[in-house]
Each structure stands twice: as structure tokens, then as C-alpha cells.
Length: 619
Image (tube, rainbow, N blue to C red; front, top):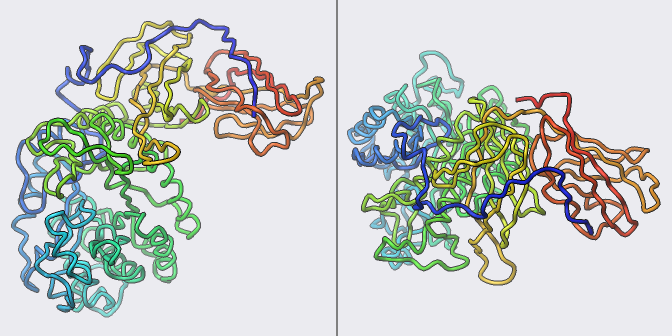
């Protein structure tokens, strides 16, 4: 472990009080003053409206106030085509028209095998139970007793008959101009006629929902897909070919994965797709891979890295990633008669925790390269007792998370470059956004139980500080000086016992600067022993980047402006006694010299210099 002296900063510090102002405090809000919210096409909300015709003007008004561009909802095949060959699109027609009139793009989920297409193989199913609905994670409490009497999943989860039949009527799966769909493949026919009907009105189609959530005895026979991995691969293939035949411009989205029920489902699915010799010529039968992440905000970063690794390992690189469901369900809402108690291990949080989750999740998604994020969902609606996911309560009153989504939608728009600098020994998360308005945003929150303070280089003009609700405080700070800022700690410990597990960080602070320089800083130093002799081959960590000292003991690395921990790497042959120097400011456009003394077991001394690089950071 390292032993280090306190940083002797050689520049002026401007002190700002720790923490963030409450969202209902007497501070100025630029959002409240601006009724016109530009649409952020990277963000959406689930169930602004429903395919059953629920599309009130107030729902649209509230969704528009968040500035999102997309709505996600389900086209239930089992409801549209209850009688084979007699589809009724009356209700989805109304919803598509209303969404379009309110300028929302649509991600439509194609889901639900009708009884006639399931072969009537209900077995011991309790057909009186309603089919699973998107957003549910189990049968509602009032259905638990009858659910215990069933021994298999709902009929709508069964792979449709004829799925293995050719897609086209010429007996092939080869697309071509003017080809008709094979009537012996009901799924192909339904997808084709639906995508044809809404060509140009529904921009993306998601093939099923949570195919890795299989009904089993362990899930109480709740789930969305009773088939195998290989059968879902076939469902996806048929759906892709049918959509592209109907509307070549539509985006085909793989069914959003729940992950935790079958973590190996996705790698198996990619392997199954890869084994189809026609897959490479057809985009591997999907344009986008979709995911559902709840409660732990950092999953949108960590799991996205895993998803991209799995795609690369499968030989299917370059696919886009969407998160089509994300949120933290609420507990302890004082406005509800049924005030669900917040308990560790329930994966729920307070109103403030939910608001922090929304901003943190979207920031993590941006830095991980997620193309689009949908927050689940607009209202609580009727998911079951205690299932409070809504940005809005069922009485129409918004929760603070709606304002938080508006902040993310407004301020995170137009991002050209995003990077992450986790620092202060992992206790401070900082995500930097450079946007197309020549603005630099730094999004910060604490990840540990204690408040910390950092010295943040301020290099632009017109600096502002915002909290996660959009309340704004101007900052009186000279350009080229450092801002001492308190970072609020994390408070949502979801561990019922043992070590704490903070699934959402503390309250979010956003710092805005205009026309800040974008050149890299260069971290320089020399690794030497206690007698001043240079040491070669010592791995040095600067943030998440590594460099090895040269024969002269010197090292140097370019990093974007921000805060960095600098230390001998953990795998060094010279074990240290402390984590090094934490949250070192790296500036753009000026030189900052900072000696760093460390006391490892062999007494290394790493003086280093942070100075301007001659090369601009690519944007």
C-alpha cells in the first residue's frame, strides 16, 4: 500500500459548499424557465402510450416535457389476431396515429403467440391467468394463488407453429424483390403484414421481449419465452427477414434481454446465429442488441463492455446496443397510500435515489457507447402491488425522476465525445461530455459512504453548476483556477448484511463550461528508488491507463483533461503501501507541476508533471 503526502497545490482554490441543493430549494432552474425542450433522439420512455388505445393527451404532455424522442410499446400478436387470418389493428392504429401526431418515434415489440398458432398445447396451464405483460417480473400478488396451480408457462410464450418453415412462398429464406411470404409460416406472415401496415410510421421493431426469461418452476411459471435458444434464433431470423421485406429502412432489434435468469443465453444465441451459413449475408438477423438493466446504474457501463466483448468473440462486431428498459423502482413514496418500506436487498430506492439512477444510468450508457436508452416507464400503471417504476404516479403527479430525465435529455444532447475518469480511489465517478455546442459538461457523483472533496480544473467560460433536478447555481470562479467541490456520498446500500453494496451513487452534480480547451494533458514522471536510482519496467497506472517506466525510469502518457489517480500498478513487483495520489487535476492548455512522493516497500519516488500536450484530443 502507498503512503503519500497531502497534495501541495500551487494554484488558487475556489471553495464551493459540499453537496447539491435540494430539488425543491430556492434556486434558479434554467429548465423551468424554458418551456421548449428540444427532442433528444437518443432517449425514450416505455409505455407513453399502449397498443390498446391508452394514449391520453396528458401522458403525451408529460413525456414531451422530458424531451425524449421515442416511445416503446407492444403489438401483442395474441390480441391482434385472435382468429387466424382475421387480424384487427383498430387499437394499435389509434396509438400509432397518436404517437406520430405527437412527434414520437416508435419502437414496436412483436410478442405473443395466439392460441391457434400454439397448437392448443396448453397442458396443465391455467388459461384463466392473463398472459405476461411487458414490464412485469412475476404474476401480480392477487394471482399468486392460481399461479401456484399451473405447471407450465402461458400459451403466448410457446414458439409458434410453422416457425421452421421457409419464410418466402418460393420455398426459400432468400429475400428478393416482390417475393410473397409463406402462408405456412404464421409468424413470418404476421410480422410482414404488421411492418407493411406501419411502414414509415414505426421506425424499429423488437423481436419478442426477454427471450432469456423462461417460465420455470423457479419463476412461478412466469416468463416470456418457453422455447429453446435455437428456437429463438429462428424466431429472430424469420422476424428480421419479414421486417426487411416489408420495410428495408426499419431497424430490427433483438428481443431485450433480462440477463440474470440465464446469463449464458446471449452467448449461446450468438453462437447459434453464427452457425447459420446465410447469417453473414443478412446482417446476422439483427441491427441492434437490446438489454434491460434495473436498480444498479453502473450495469449500463459494465455490462455493455461485456456485450461488446461477446459480440467480438462471436465474430459479429459492430452491432449497435440499446437499453430498452432501465429504472430503479421506488419505495417510501410519501404521496402513495401504500407506502412500500425501503429495505436492503429489495433493489428499490427513494424518490431521490430514482432521480439519481436516471441521470447516472444515461451518463454510463453514453460513455459505454450505448446508442439509445429507454426509461421504464412513464406511469406506474398496473404492474402489481408495490411495483412503482413510473416517472409519474397514477394520479398524474410527476416524481422527481421526470425532472432528472429532462436534465439528462437536455444537457446530454449532442454529445460528440464522452470519457470516464473514475478517481479518488474509486469513490468519485466523473464522466466528461464534449458536445456540439462547444460546451464541456462534467457529471460527478460519489460511489462510497463518505463525502469527499476534489479540486476540479475550470478552463472554460460561463461556468454553471446544476443538480440532478435542473436547479442551477452560477459559479464565481476565474478561468484557469481550480474549483474545490464537495461530492455527496452514496446512500443506497442494498446489502442486507455484510459489506455495503451501493447500487446507485450519491446525488449528481453537473458542471457546465463553454469553450473549454480540448487538448490532452501529459502526465510525466520518473520512477526511482530511495537512493534516486531510476527503475525500469515499473508499471504505472494513470486512471484506467497504464504505462511502463523506461530504462531511465521515466514515463509519460497523454490523457484527456480531468481528475486521475496516479500510482504504481497493483501488479507491480514493487508492492505499495497506499493507493498513490488521488484525484490529480490534469489540465488542458497549461502546465501543472506536482511532486508525488510514495513509500512502497522499496521506497519508490514518482515525481510527475502534468503539462499540455502538443496534439489536440480527437473529437
